Length: 94
Image (cartoon, rainbow, N blue to C red; front, side):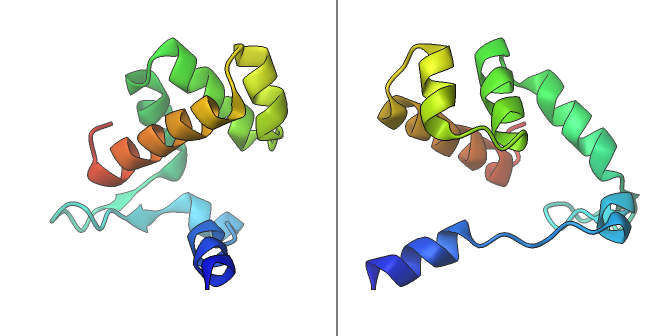
């Protein structure tokens, strides 16, 4: 059961070229399409320097153990930081 739950949490949708062009923001009542590139740029501007660095390294598919080593923190602390970043994004705080 834990394995299935973990796999469901890690499941990601593939990003195709058409998906990166325009999407509708489900968090708002606005039905205007949003540009993912601009949304990512806005998101990165709102994050602190450390969180921005962590997120960019994750987007570059660098393993968490290497990111933790570069940041000088434990892997558990890094995972907690990533959890907070994801939570802020989901809640629309950034």
